[in-house]
Image 1 (cartoon, rainbow, N blue to C red):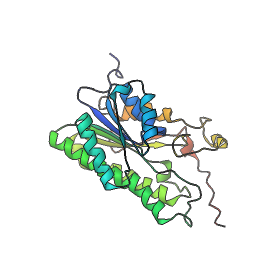
Image 2: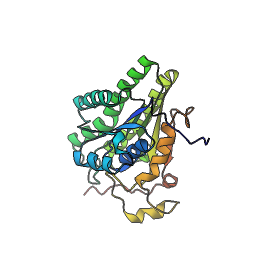
Image 3: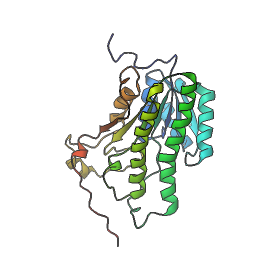
Image 4: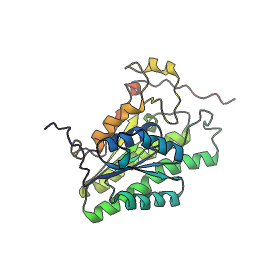
Length: 260
């Protein structure tokens, strides 16, 4: 049997994926159900969730959830819905993030945009991870969590609300991995490059900065996400940041924003 056969155990494992209505979250959620894992597709938009589930190879394993993760009540509602629908959640992928606007540089971003970005990325990522971990620790069950960060957790992006939220998530991954490793709960980060999906509208000219010569697609992230989430394949990997960027991180081309 190949090492990559039966990467998950559908009889014992279930997943929650946020941001599952589009982009990278959608690709990861669809890949999980394709592996036989019962998966909650969580997103802010009902039409996107419905379309993502309809397009999945095994839609009967997908459970929709629609709500706002910028609010604590929304996070708690997702947790309750997931427990009722799929039971104990062993795998968690946090891909939800508000859309980014190039106009929201340091001198322009408003308080609500700043709050929303941190609330969905960092606050929801922490709260959902912690509450899911409580259940796993109590049940003495292993788990695997994956937070979607960014190359701009370490390099400026002219979008301080976005970069600082992702930088916080990058350290959160390390904190949680260190705290929960003794309980068999692994926590890792997936670090996308220029992925033409979700809230990112890429200029095709950007490809000239990418050694592999093209923009990424959401589907480029899904195989690596599954490998890192799988306790069979990556059972000795935790606290890691796995970069999937076509080599983009080998350069930084951003100029300072125009303030006038």
